[in-house]
Length: 157
Image (cartoon, rainbow, N blue to C red; front, side):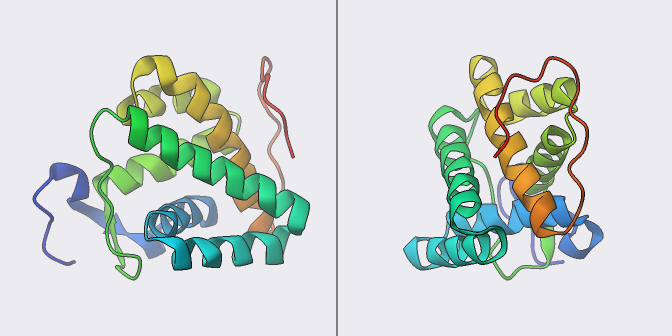
């Protein structure tokens, strides 16, 4: 593992290759999105190339909105490792588990994890976005969509 960043949220807690496809995708695309316009173009190319233009645009919008809300309403800055780093930081692990839980329809777990990332009043907003993103990542990985729990009110794309 590389040297731990100064902030605990960046402390390495594992490796990307230990994650499932949805979790690893969530971390990779978070890193890419936050790495500037060229990296965001790569995200678009991946999403559109795998999901098609319409679904790719929807996934991209979910990721963009999720990143913006986490940045604007975060409890603190979300720490990330470099795009090519094989380590998994503590904040990244939380984000990965959050997206995975939301994609599985585990809304209560996703809400709890969301409160670690943003103010509690913003948690419902980011859970819906994480669910849309997570389902897109499942599709990209060739995984079936899970059955959503009763009471889900978001839209599936």
